[in-house]
Length: 156
Image: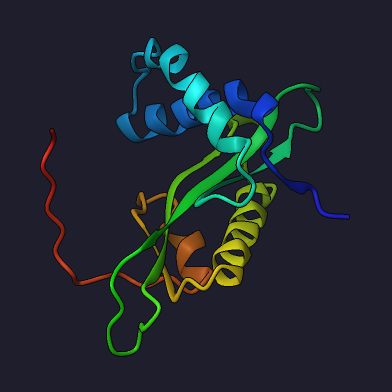
């Protein structure tokens, strides 16, 4: 039996806690957490939609009942098809986090494998993510490559 399971609405607070762990590790400092209370109802609703375009896979912490050890979350997005990608479905991974005391046990990799299977089952032709330098070896081992397509952003 797999350690990985699909996150449920009752996991929402822990999912957000692990997302903050990821954000803090990227910033190398503790950040603001007041956003978590505002995000909780929306995340609970999204986790309650098992057929939707969002999924989170988690591992329960083996030493701390009621907490999560690892999280991988992502979405599917439709874009108009093109040659080599006629159905237009793309996967995006945007949250990969492991509790600091549960690292180096393969939990994030196992969660990532489940998310990639979820994307494949729903017809995604490829999956995109932004990798930190620390995580890049894991993604490379899973088959991810650097993308040369430039990215731009506008905050609204």
